[in-house]
Image (cartoon, rainbow, N blue to C red; front, side, top):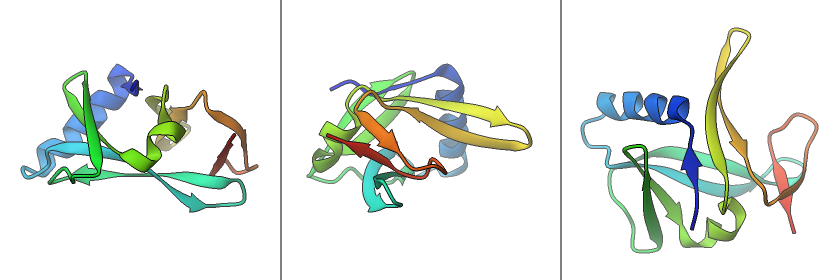
Length: 108
């Protein structure tokens, strides 16, 4: 299983985790949404569930539900400034398409 962070994304996640002393990791899940099918559902995690796997990159424990592994395998998570906005950006090699607004993606 490979899922990785750029240094900018890791720094931002570690900042958020420093604000929540109970946080033990950062969950990267997917859920049905948008017009293309899947969207990212990320959050801080206070406890790893039995149906999740963990990997560590740049000091961040990434928590991935087992049913999302095939959809996020190989994804690189970045954190970018786009004008006045700051957002996480997902570079997913499994995505075969996305909706026009970028909210959701499709996989084979």
